[in-house]
Amino acid sequence: MAAGFSWIQRSDRGEDSSAGMWNSTVHLMIRKAGERMEQSVSEALDAFLEAECTSWGVPGMALVMALRGEPAYRCLYGYRDVARRLPVTERTVFGVASVTKSVTALAVMLAQDHGKLSVDDPVVRWLPELQGVREARMRAVTVHHLLTHTAGFPGMAALFRARAESIRKDPDWRITAAEMPDPFEVAPIRDVSGLMAVLKELDFRFLGNPGTVFNYSNEGYALLQEILERATGKSFLEFVQQRIFDPLGIRSAVFRTADLSRMRDVTELYAARAEDGHRIVFHSPVWWDVGDIYSNGSMKIHMADLLRYLEVYRCHGEVDGVRILSEDGWKRMTARHVQTPTGRGYGYGLHVDEHHGVNLLSHSGGIKGVSADVVVAPEAGITVAAAANVAGVPVSQWTLAALNAALGLPLDARVVDYPIQMETAGEDTGLAEYEGLYRSEEGGRAVAETAGGELWITQRGQRTRLYPYAEDGFADATRTLAVRFLRDARGQVWGLFTGVRVLLKSS
Image (tube, rainbow, N blue to C red):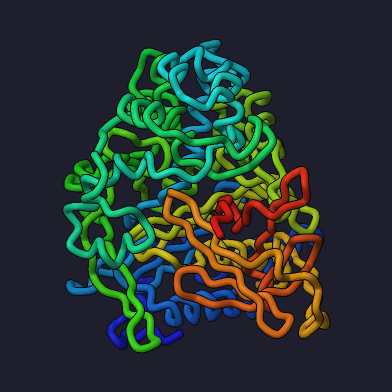
């Protein structure tokens, strides 16, 4: 993949005044042996990250890692502002998109700790307006279902209406919002009350009974904001600031784009388009807001503070002697409540997995101008946070590579390793039943087709060959893309699970 940018350079680490806090090489204790990581491993990680950023044409990226709360490694690549050649620092504020969901889940668990609500409460107890939703199973949805993305919501464009106003102000929206609805064809909303009114208007059906189908839902996490506010009597922003950020000493975290104006070290935003087979990255400064809905993906923060926040999960809810979340709350939040069709686990606002004998908590986020990821390995004492100022780049692979380096594993060790069967190429294995268009109202779209006994999938203009790894499960040759086709009680294929979302078969 051509970057197309000779002007993107790696920033000089010495330009950051905090550089003395950081080791020039990784000095982490390998989990089993207690040995210091060899310098060659550190250099391999440096080279890997730089090559990835160059290949993807990333304008700026920050990746930082801590061991038992102490700074241990960082890679600061490129610029927060390319035109002015301002380098990325560990205190450059980036958007982190859906990493925000862990903050929302933590806030809900804090409210439960203080007896304000229970995760087992029916959602309609707090949001009686939803009694009017046409889908009768809405009355069986609990707070737990919203936290785990198992309410049953299909992919919807409801929350898009809260984003539409800011997208309308973006001159690049036809490129950056290509897979979303036309922002000028929807009636904008500003808050969760407006979202609930839209849900009452829509004639949608759940994908299954609550608790039976995992489908990543921004609408669900938006509803959690209103539940939290009604249960605590505080605004979402006030509650999160007082109960999470203030006790942790976090100062850079904000949710409103307007609040960025008081900060000096904030990234510009960039976007990408395809041109003559190349990925062209360009300046695209308009942030996409979600009105007054902050709980699904609006947080902006610098990576040093993001690492500080991750201490809550590394330390079982107690950081530097300050109890943020109860031990019981931490256990419930980080339990593996759900296994997705492609083998990942999910708790409350966090993926929960096992990785080469280490429990792993993680979450990624992405939207226009944002790619972000966090990883926590509590037993190993490792936290990793990273963000880039352009969407669609594999930051989650970069944080995992850093974790792998710290654990003494190959940089490309996977959380789920799909045992693809490449020898089936060219065989007639009944692939025709998978063919068709799969889509959601949220904007997701995939086309599955067969040719010569091979299964191919096309998403975002990229056509990829798939190989079987399990019944109805397929992955690409690199095993980084994995999907699973979903069947109903009659054995008919009705949907496609693409990693976190379900697309419905429409033809």
